[in-house]
Image (cartoon, rainbow, N blue to C red; front, side):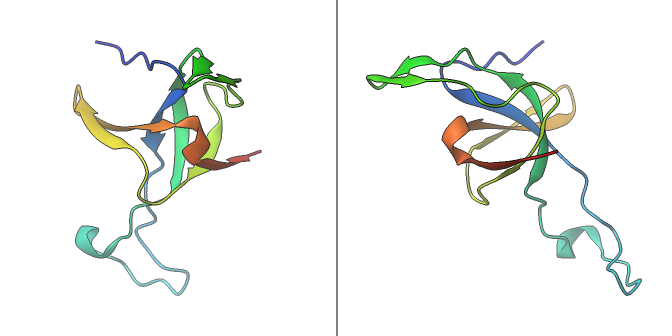
Length: 94
């Protein structure tokens, strides 16, 4: 199956969290904070959403930083994805 976002939605796949700190301390899985960086997997068509024209500014393959508590988490084919609105993307990493 394939996730196809609608409107101004974007599908993200989280970048793996670092397992060690800068000083070399190994963190167990529960102690790791979820990273706010993700790779864009799919982008909706944009268009008119709630009466406003929405131009999609991100592309598939971009690495982005998104709002900490944004979106809906979905598990599909053993992979975790996050579906968010484009407005919850804070920056594109180049």
